[in-house]
Image (cartoon, rainbow, N blue to C red; front, side):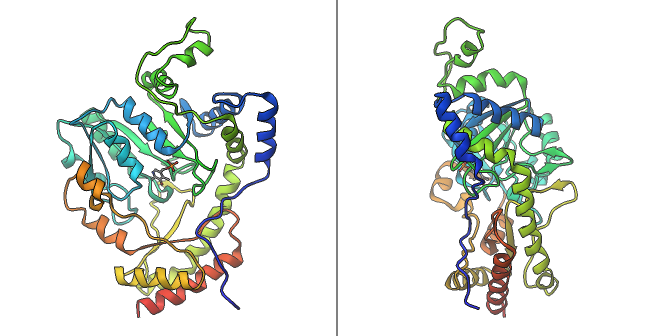
Length: 383
Ligand SMILES: *Cc1c(COP(=O)(O)O)cnc(C)c1O
């Protein structure tokens, strides 16, 4: 059988998105905060149990809003992993503040909570945990450290929609949480995101920052008789066309997650013997973490084996990818951030990680084809 061409991701469109967009067109409300945005907010608030949800253009935008709400400024520090997407750090740097990178745990690849306290200084303002692969950070410990040092917790839950930590949805445990609806995530809007707010004192200001620094949201609710410029802000609200698309996806969020989980589990079962033989390490999900099958990865023994595996899989038509270039070794990271400790696990694991194709409608036959190609290439790359 010839190898199939399998991309890393194929955005899943369910069919109802277009009907929703047509409905938005007939109501003639195309700018932000119309009926579909309201329905998305209600879905997020009721499904996740969030005090407030606000749609944004992206998780990047939600993180920028969170950094403004945290009142970060020059000299302030935010503790986060270097094993993350650039937006986690950029949001802090845009306020003139400094990301402080801490190493990750070898099991979950999440911020190592046991190293956080030693990274805290009098300038620390917040902790920014990233729930890698939709598997939760050790939130009880992080929330306790934050409470003792009076720090905000901003969760980067870009990958964590419908994942839980001790039964609590990710993004709703810290004072602020950021979700992504980018086309590579579990629920998509092309580009999109949301800010989740649990601290009631931050809700009013979050609405103002999202509406260009005006009190327009209060005006629309009839709470003030004219609206005006009251704070810093930008335009962070998506149009109703995006919200209409997103609402169709949110309504199917559980089904989309279950379909991902089917492929995730098929991969997990298929590599058990290679893990027993010491050739790969599979993802580790602690019992307190309910995960959303956001991504499936394997850890290979060496960088050379990873490099060879990615190249040979590509030759055979399967798009496997690495994750991430650690931010402390990037040009901007060296310029704008500092590290606490040596980040040895971050550098070791990011050299050895391979992500496999995964999307909701990936068929069993396609999963099996990826497994065949991956097993062949890994076995020959590690011989
Ligand atoms: C995808 C992702 C982001 C950025 O999300 P956008 O919606 O594309 O801005 C931020 N952080 C993490 C961990 C991500 O995976």
